[in-house]
Amino acid sequence: MSEKLNEGGEDWENLSWAEQAFYFGYAKYYGVSVDVDRKMGLTLLKQAADLESTDAILALITIYENEDDENADEREAIYWRERQADVHRHLYGMTDKRTLMALGNLAHAYSLVEDYEKARAINEPLLELRRSVLGETHPDTLVTMNNLAYAYGKLGERQLAAQMEERLLDIRREAAGGDVDEDTLHTMNNLAVTYGQLGEHRRSYEMLEKVLAGRIRLLGEEDPETLTTMNNLAVAAAELGENARAIEMFEKIVAIRTRVSGYDHFDTAIARNNLGYTLCDIGEYERALAIHEELYKMRLAKYGKMNTNTLASMNNIGLVYEGEGRFEEALAMHIEVWALREKLFDEEHPSTLLSRYHVALCRGELGDLSVAVLSLEEIYSLRCEKSGEENIRTLEVLETLGDFYARLGKYEKAEEALLRTYETRRSLFGEDKADTVRAKKLLDEVKERKS
Image (cartoon, rainbow, N blue to C red; front, side, top):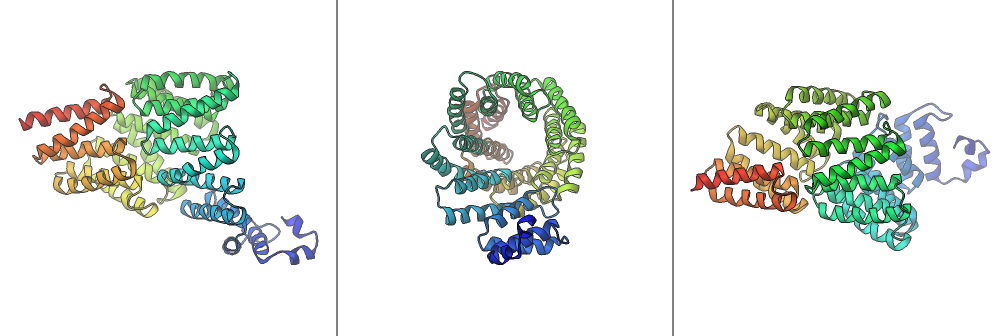
């Protein structure tokens, strides 16, 4: 940039106001041949962006998405991603590759802040556009198929996710000509995770073992993709009840991530989080709490409270409190997370609804059952509307609602809610799945009390 401006004064004079604002704003923000003034730099970049400077919009996205930048802001980044898509549509047309790329990036940005409904709403028409413009086997089309399958999975539509991933795997295998390349392994990894979410844990585990062996052979044990598969295999092991094996793998992942990337690296933090979550699941609350509290302090210092990762750590601390029966402390934590998520997202966002659910759960456990039931009824209705009746989070709310109905002596409602929970889980995950077994036990207890 500075070289172009130094070629001659006439270059600057021939630039439009938007171009001048972009170049000077960029120079002021990063201190290119001038003194740094980030406030002025941002102001000029926004002025240029408002005049549909695509360079300025991209510069703003880069600033707001950069975790190490003092102005990093997830919401601002998404705003400018939206603006980028709108400007590209206006300047280049709907089927231009730059517009399609901007839409794909916007959908990905929504996924990063867990707004999977919006990600799906963009990716579904984007997939049809890319199929018609580029063809089904084009790399960009395949990326959209992958991202749409991911959104389906997060929204609880796992059959749709599996169908998309199975089709994607067929295309990948055909393109590889019988060999197992990294693209094929990536799709196998995702499909295996989806199988696990569908309750096919043995099938998931066996596929992940093949993916892990392939990635170690192609990439080595310390490659990030290899470690991702190792993480997924650990999750599958936990689902099969092989908790010692799962914890062993999680601890190995943390050790490798720490050695390769550092203890405070984002990926290491994810590995530590997963270890803590599994420890909580098996009742090792003291170790789990130590991990989540340490992660919370690190994330708070790095990102502040209004960040999805910081709020996830706060949520996990609340879950440990619940496991320990410390419901008053858990309630206080979940109320705070609920309020922050409502500001960061909105009142009906899946993460906000998750916090509302845990607030209602804690209130019920503390004896305020009537208030808890009213809240759970509203949450259940919203979950059905946004995620579907078969979503695991929807079923979690329905099970708790059935349990609380029973505690209030409303056995007809309790039986109806728990029967629906049990039958849906049995259909989706099988009779032996732990969640199915728990729902059946609660249902039998209600029937016994009722009789």
